Length: 142
Image (cartoon, rainbow, N blue to C red):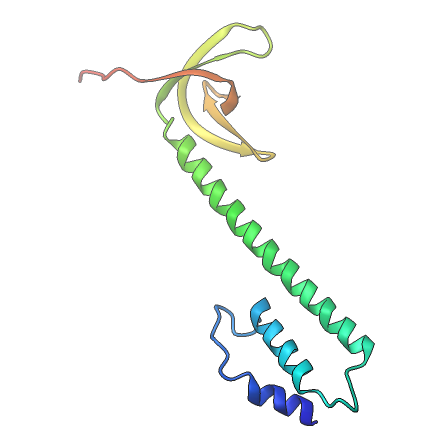
């Protein structure tokens, strides 16, 4: 097929990606543009072929965007865990949701449930948003 051969010849070198089986959207557009430019005018691309290629491009773009969102999400989760871990061994106070009293205790752990972080204090799980104060524990003399 002369069209495919001309596309292969005119694209030049393809840059290496993290996964050699993946095509980025810029490369896809270059290939599509080259194919359209070099197609035989007496036998243009069929509508269904064009629609199929555009659908592939749309799918590729959505996967790329999803990958970026997922990467950002994972990064933010690590930042949250690092930020919350700074409260380990600190004395915290919070308002108890049941009795409305101010309670306090020492943070001994961090738990994540249902996309929400909790401090483990006095064998209870306290939502991080409920903490009203925090302070360092006094140094103990040995």
